[in-house]
Image 1 (spheres, helix red, strand yellow):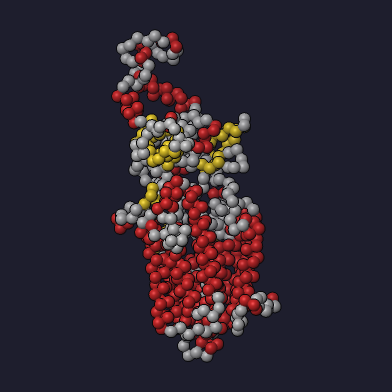
Image 2 (cartoon, helix red, strand yellow; image 1 turned 180 degrees about the vertical axis):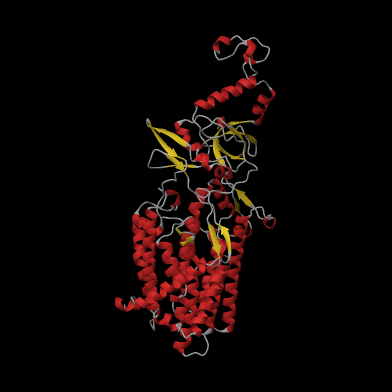
Length: 618
């Protein structure tokens, strides 16, 4: 077996793939079978190089200390025997220094060769062209990057052009500053004798595998999920909601639709829109878009919640009966669903004329799939951001109102003078969850829903229908199926809820603080893994416990919401089961996204934090 030339930890010079440039790298490991070295550049990029692409530092230092040319004929004071071989060499009287000649040669070469910048590009699997990767621009540290020259030009062979364009040696901040220059540049890619041109500002075509089972899966979800929701609510209204009685008796369609109820829902939606537009609350910037821009968002969710509480109180004072919502609950669900379909149709129509830069990374070009997943990333009407508004306002605040209505309905239906302890626990737990979300509204801007997913039927249905009418399922269940909870049992449930909330809140707060300011002295004790994007991955604190401690806290809280309903039926635990499936699916999406984004650094992170959501369960 051939012996290795360089040892682990040795600092050497490594050639950048596809170029003749050498940068300082550290040897991480050596594969005896493939004879490849894994090296790490100063910007955190990890690559595998052949041994002949690596040179010791001394070979470069000798060139600096010696003459500028290895040819004796170019040394000052020596007679040249090959002057006739260099027709471009000037006469002795006008001979320049070796350094000046070398610079002139480079200058001439720069005029003749193709300029290639090491900016992130993605090769299209179905097309002979390259285009810029449209992931989010990352914040990059300037310190610790390998030496670079943004004006350096060099030849790339056809087979190595793709390799050299996967990584960036230029800080992303410089790319944003030079976007006007980049927009005028074009990359030439020669493939099988044809030359194709692609501007650097054109986004990449999405050719990745579709999620949710692709087009058939998206179509079945859009049909099956609303039907399943109605069946679930109808079963819950039965005296004995047994699985043997499935499906429950179905009401006539005419009994489910009432125009007045649809008007009530429209009034609710536009009231929340009015609160959203009020010029109160601070304005913050979201995450960078593909073109470097940051959209502005007004954070006034807590104000909207307080105004809603005042409006509901005033309505009750003036004689409005909140039990109207309970008596027309199924009609209200259908009204919300009809509005969601209309909104999704509007979003699909407007996305057809949206510029490519405004499209979400997950869009596919298929009409059915894009209607479901969402095609446009940030659909706005002026400054009114439709996706951001629907995420927290109509559905989340509506959830609290529905819970309050169910509390009043329990007292009415069961003839109680006061709500049951189980109903109080459910309302209190979920009220805390909603208030926490509105209080930490800014954290929503870094979530996958905002930064990655388009706004289509999936998010619209989830925000406007699923959240207010399924997340309130425990309260709806207790109206028809009372359960008495003892104080010792209530104390254990409260302790479980607080445990889940502490994990959930502390993990999210730590993550958001690190994203805002990684150099915060309060976070100096946290261990990280540097990545080629310039970002660091947390491997200690809450995020060294499991990969998604916030998901773990969420699951514990979901269980605490269901326990007050007792153990007579599995129906109130549907939310826990659904939420577990949802988080496992979302964790899998995060895993794929991070593996593509961080590469070898993510594999190293997985070794440091092997557990995904629950400790000791891979």
